[in-house]
Amino acid sequence: MVVEGADSGRPAARSRIWTGLIALALGCFLAGDSVHRARLALDAVATWWPWALLALAAFNVLRSVVPVNSLIGPSALVVAALSGLALSHGLDARDVRDLGVPLALAGYGAVVLLSAGRTVGRTRWTRFLSTGHVHVPAGSGELLVFRALLGELRADLATDPVGGPEAVHVTAVAGHVRITVPHTWQVRVHASGAPLTRISETSRRETSVPPGADGHGFATRHEVALHLLGVCSAVSIVYA
Image (cartoon, rainbow, N blue to C red; front, side, top):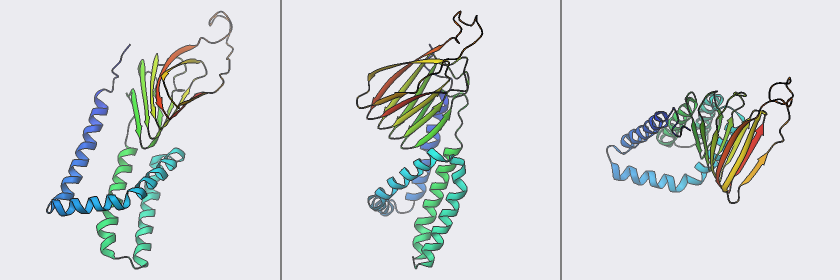
């Protein structure tokens, strides 16, 4: 069984991109007066972190209903409208310029980066503090890995009804992993470490085929071993 997927370099490249962007943003922000600007950043984080968490939660709820690509245009309109309302109600234009515009640019960049992700050739998907849909292409590999850490991951494996992986590793920590598989599959769950984790499975319907498929009149099942590691989470298996 192949443990390392075909995309072993792609997640590392994505991590380097995020690390480089964060380092570039921090360098540009701290240039000139590092101590003063660092104190301003810490004060802003101490004041606005509850609202940032609420905004992140609302964004994740929207992502679970609406594709992230559809949020780019409305988010730009919302930022423009909020800026106009702030100016019309007497908020200092300097505050809007120094705080609102940078935050809007940062949020817009994050949405664009999230919408630019590609799933071709990948075998591992992780959602941390976010909600995301994953369409696993056919022939992705013998081992697939799904992780949801304080978020939700919805993986659709129904695009490959004939083949499929031999094993699926699921890690969920205060999150939800929902896996959709073809009804011709047989998923066997091995949950040796899953405290306070709910595992739900929809009923599988039988599919009749002409005699000769397996000698009994039913389609041959493709067996998949699902190894689960979860804490305070939920895992759903849906047969399409």
